[in-house]
Length: 341
Ligand code: NAP
Ligand code: G4F
Image 1 (cartoon, helix red, strand yellow):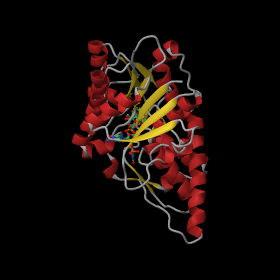
Image 2 (image 1 turned 90 degrees about the vertical axis):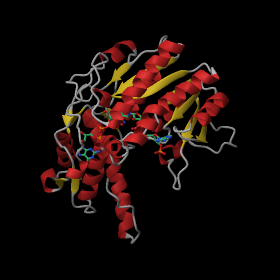
Image 3 (image 1 turned 135 degrees about the horizontal axis):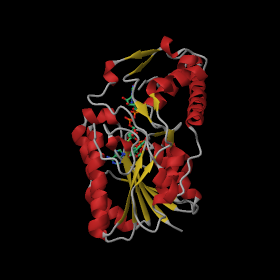
């Protein structure tokens, strides 16, 4: 039985990856942050009390800013595979918190690599690199496209990408960069644009919200399903040698198209509900992302199963169920968390 260590296990990808690894028989250790509220919603269904002999998920408090503790954890767990998904992952927020983003999203990767080097454990390392690193580079983007980062987040990810390559070459580590294009799901954080749209549209439909405020609706993204993308993360660590791979569906749509599609599927006209708020614009934008993942499809045999259209349906369905639950509570006189991203 293999053992994996996941940073970012409480995030969208971490939850899907933990499910995948448990299905494959792994024992899964995850790094979680202490918070004054519960932050394990996405993995609660996987967790069993550690006294239970059947338990295969173990959670450890820690933070990507603390290197000594990461070293102790890796020394104790000695995982066969490390999936480093933890990050300050929001691009707009990275303009508000550039130093923090550099520390966690950039240096966090170095801290883990150093922990591997210092402990001398034999392990395989996955780095959650991002299509955001391509920035202003014209589409389509592949492993050969030079990076032109357009945000503190992207600059931090470029640092992490190169430090992974450096440790691979300098210390012969099995370390891979998965350069993943945007991937979404019903578990997507509510401040990312797709989920913000499906949450708002379903609430508008049920009369719980009037307006949806967005930023740049002309930006284009290559959106796929997170469940398909974590499979690629696992495949990268099963190869004979470490390498870097672009993972993308290979089609691009604007934010406007996404909104239009969601509202249309709910028989509504988005123009009646959507307004632009300059607050959501970024000082520098990434205009078009469109991935060429032919290398991953050929070498890893990676083949995404969920189309863009099915992804949209999946997100609408889940958010409609959530909105209905919220409405039932509201109608019964309860307070709900009506916070909008
Ligand atoms: P996400 O939902 O935002 O999850 C981020 C995770 O990182 C959460 O578990 C979060 O913990 C954890 N984290 C944040 N700061 C931390 C810190 N200081 N110490 C320890 N853990 C910390 O992100 P995601 O969408 O799953 O993405 C996973 C990774 O892939 C990220 O590195 C992201 O940058 C990268 N990526 C994502 C996409 C995409 O489209 N989703 C595309 C390319 C690359 P809390 O739950 O406590 O906040
Ligand atoms: O959903 P987004 O915030 O995702 P973004 O910036 O593309 O970043 C995501 O994908 C990256 C991979 O390319 C990841 F590395 C990163 O961690 C994250 O998961 O924004 C998508 C687009 C942007 O062009 C943004 O300007 O939507 C535009 N947008 C328009 N109105 C908005 C909004 N984005 C957000 N979050 N909120 C809006 O109201």
